Image 1 (cartoon, rainbow, N blue to C red):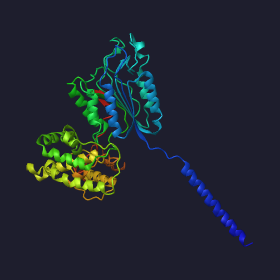
Image 2: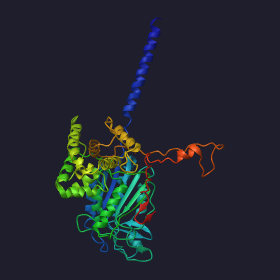
Image 3: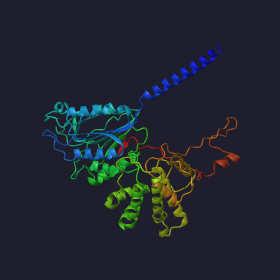
Length: 480
């Protein structure tokens, strides 16, 4: 009789334990969701079978070089060169199998492309010797079908087309040179190597002018796709003596950064800055770049022009002993400070202290903007918006706030950081309008007494609201 309750308690406990083990086993057996990957489909067609389609020496080189860059930027890259019609289908099938875990999709095509009846087509290498429109498009890849297949409101899609050669069937009522504007899908960005209706050149070097400019800028840390395309556009125009002006159309819902995952070695950045400052020619180039770029981007750009100071991103993630990265960062920071004293603060130039402070604040605001922590106007006015941005930087890097004022040490610390530190940029909130009851509201256009005096106070101490991001949808010459 006395063992009955005890046995029941033991049975209940045993059942509970077995139940928990079953739940734990089910949790273990449940597959862990795979992390989202950025997917790239890179294509280059050089060796065409048709006598009407000239050989393109650089197209497959363009695809291979860009694939290497995108792999360094943590893209899952599928590369296809000299693709037949079936080759396109197989490559797209492979890509389709990876879409479920893709956070973004990039499609690059270098090769022959045409517009017919206002639609764009990518030409496989087995395109026949076309005598008419029907023959040319029989095995061609319709660009709108590619966009429809991969574009989605839920992820960003990027399409780069270096494919605007002469039309092989001649001109007519429904036939034109170059590519036509497209109906971009939701959350989609389309970049053309040149303006609509214009043709491109393959280039005399290893890569086409457009891809050359793309390769020079895609791995620069902190550049949004809009800022990167401005640089690509200007450099392509320079390389082609004004013949090509790259064009883009966008329906993106937020900015995109190719180098968001990229980590640079602080010691390399520090060494690059030191060598540039010791070379009068390189230092002058750096000062020119600083007129339109943040400090880190300017150093990387100048470093790319000088082989001895070129910064090479790491090929893949490396595991360093605990404390190594902190020690490297602190050592690099100490060596950077003295150079920045002269370069940014301008002590040797004899500037007034007030101008030095403004220059320093402007440089820090620019670096915070590169890191995604600041979106207000870069004006050198260190106000509440700048302090909020700096506080966000400290919070996202899990650092103790050593100062909220501009210092050279702070600038050196920001300079050595890479990637997007603040995922959600700090913006200045607009003040809510005060409520006025209807029975006491003054007539429109009039203010009396204390209210009038309050409304006339200047608002210069309040940071300016961030400018609207109007980069999406704007191309050279108009808004689409």
